[in-house]
Image 1 (cartoon, one colour):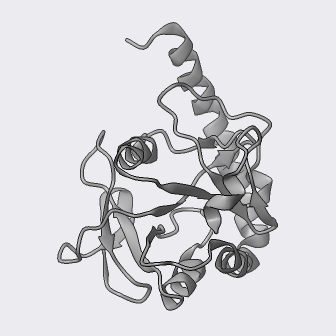
Image 2 (spheres, one colour):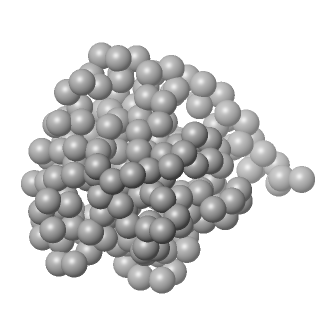
Length: 207
C-alpha cells in the first residue's frame, strides 16, 4: 500500500494525464507540422560537438512531438544515435544503436524499436517525451515510471543529460512529484529551451 502523501500524488497525476493528453493532442494538430523542424534547428545549435557521445531519441507515440528530424540531424553531425527498448514492465529501459531510416520492430505498447540484433549502448544524452512539464524540471509521463527508473540507473553510472522534448504549451505551473521522480536538466520546445529554475549552471551542460 502506498504512503498517504505518495498516494495523493499518484491520484493527482492520473487526473492531470487526461487533461495534458488532450492539450498535447490539440497542440500536435495545430503545431505538429512545423514543431519537429523548429526543434531540429534549435537542438542542433544547442547540443554542440558530439565528441563520441551517444544520444537516445524516441519514436513519436500518439501525439508526441516528432523528434526524428533532430535525431537524424544529430547523426549527420557525428552523434551516435539510439532508441529505447522496453525490456519488461517495472524495469529501466535498455537502448539499442539505431539511425533514422533503419529497420524497426513493433515493441511493447506498439512503440517502434530497433531490431534485436542492434548493439546495446548506454546513452550520454536522453531526449525524453512527456505529457507536461514545469519550471522546476519535472515531467508528467504516462505512469509506467520507465524514464524515472532509467535516469536513476544511468545517473549512478556516469554523467547524463536529460532533455525533455515538448510543445511550449505543455508547460504547467507545477507537476506533482515525489522522491522517485527524476528531474530533467532542461526542456526543448518549438519556441526554444527552458532551463529549470533553481538549477544554476544547467545551460553549460549542452555545450
